[in-house]
Length: 260
Length: 161
Image (tube, rainbow over all chains, first blue to last red; front, top):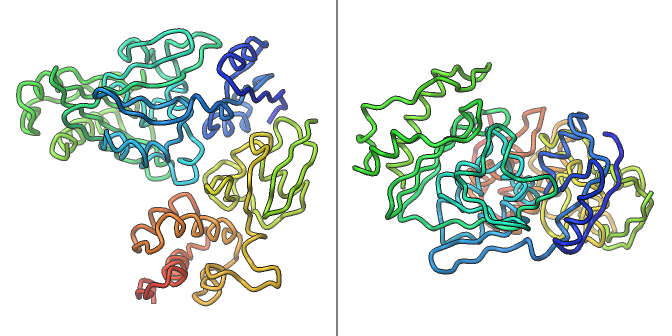
């Protein structure tokens, strides 16, 4: 790993200021960034550690909205997001216990790994990403694999999840990495059903809108029996072909509806 | 170089490190605490698990400077000062929960974190919790038995006997 200057601010304002340095990057739990830096795929000249910022941590619920500070670890979400059980269960299934003790929701959403779990929960829930400058509706946030609407130097401070009537996340794990080979998050709200798919697309997380329409009319696994997810643009690798992933999308969606 | 200070196994320590110095490297190279093993250095294997402020973490995937002021526990702090093994270590010995022993420090530290959260885990809960700890001797059966024993439960005949 190339060396860098390490900065550990105590407030969001200090962090934003520190990120003005050339080639500066924020560091949250580091469970993706540190391995990436070891491989020299990423070599920031300054790392701004966000984990000393207490205002970025915590889980709270008010008026049917669960707000999670961006620096909250997966383990804390798993333990404290009881108001949104499907989200707590998803957080408790990320990586392994030691990874969950360091990795954060803000880090995961800022990174937007195409096989990460949290993007499916955020998109499937119709969440809002709160940053130091604005609020971003989730449908405007994800912009392709490892790409988001965040500007340079912009920091996620919290994520707001409207709590649905029912929800469930089904992850089919790639057995070596434990990332989602395919993961499907289904949420049923008064406004309809959202279905978000991770792990499958070259473009990162996406909504399966045909299934959403069918499930909004009839929230039952049989409602999507006649549909099939398109394999166009899906990932094909040694773990699974695009057609296999497309098949998994439908199977996991049905399982999620059954379990919700 | 920047000075970093923390408490390791109850002792105040400090040292000069680079930004990129990992907690595992600080423990092993600055402090000489080589019980924390680095197996893969890619956060897969869990041999480097230590506790930071009570939570199990992979010390190869955390910068030493992020542990400033933290309370760190490593395998060296598990036995009593006179060398008496703690209940988990003793159970690993009694149930032959190790073969080559390389993964053992991480296994013991993960087991300690599990039993703190869940004092009477089921076999399935133990296996689930050890998802991030790899034993390349594949000695998992006896590791699970040892953790069952350390939690004061009857040890099931789960081993490949």
